[in-house]
Length: 337
Image (cartoon, rainbow, N blue to C red; front, side, top):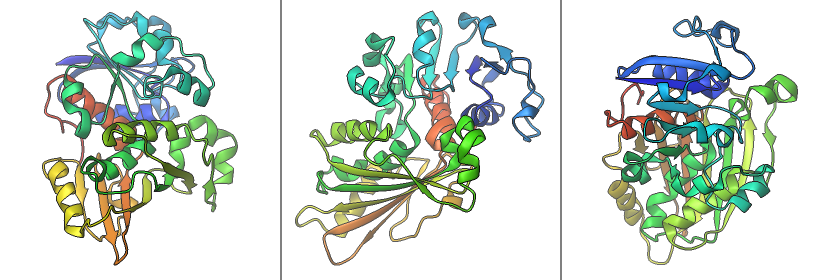
C-alpha cells in the first residue's frame, strides 16, 4: 500500500486521475492539492458522485516526503519549479505535462516559450509509453507522461518503423481531439463558445506535440523522420482519432504489416489491432485502450486509424499504468480495458 498526492487536482486531467486512483486497491491515502482552489470541494468541478465530496488542500502545505508517488497534473512549466523538493530515494514523480518530454532543452524552450529551470533532470526522465519503454519505467524515479496526440501516433507507427516497413520521410498525421484536451482555462474563456457546432483546425506546423512526435519516432527508426502533423478540435468532450497516411517500402506485403503489429502488440492488454475496421472514438471512451486499424489498397499506401481517450490513455490512465509498473503492481490495476 502506498500514499499518493495529486498536484493540480481540479483540472480535467487531475479529475480523471482522481477517478481512477479512487478505485486503486493499493492506494491507502490519496491527497489532492491545488494552487488556486484550495478549500473547495470537487463538486465545484465535477458531478461524479464517487469523488465530488473530496476536498482540495493547499499546495503550500504539501509534505513531499509523505508520499511514495506524486503526480503533477499541472500546466507546462509547473513540475520543474518544484521537483527539486522531492527526494528521489523516497518519492517517485510522474509529470503529466511536458516539462521533461523533450530531450533538447533549447527545442523545449522554443516551443513552450519558457526558460527550463531544471534541464539537468531531462536526461533522467523516462518517456512513459509502457508498451515501448516498460523496462526503463520499472527503474524510473521521474516519468515524463507522453502527450495525448503523440501517444496515439507513436503506438500506431511503432511496429512499422521498428520493422522498417514504411517510408519514414512522408508520414501524414491528421489528428482530431475532443475539446477537453485544450484544458479548463481555454474552454472557460473563448473555446467553449467557438467549439459549439464547430470543428476547429489549429497550430499547423507549430503545435507543441510536433517535436515530441518527431523525437520519439526518430528514436524508433534510428534516423530522422519527416511528418506533417495537423491537429483539430472536435465538438465532443473526450477522445482522439488520428488518421495516419504512410507509404509502404518496396516489396512489403499486407501480411508483413499484420505480422509487425502481431509481433509487438499480441500480448499488450491495452492495444487492439483491427485490420480494415473503421475505428470510432466511442470504442475507447473511458478506457485505457488504444484501437488501431490499417487499410490497404492495391497501391503502396496505407491508411492507419488510431483512437484513444485523450484523458485516459492520453493522460491519467497512462500515468496510472506507469505508476503500476514503477511500483511493481499489476499493470492493469484500476484501469478499464
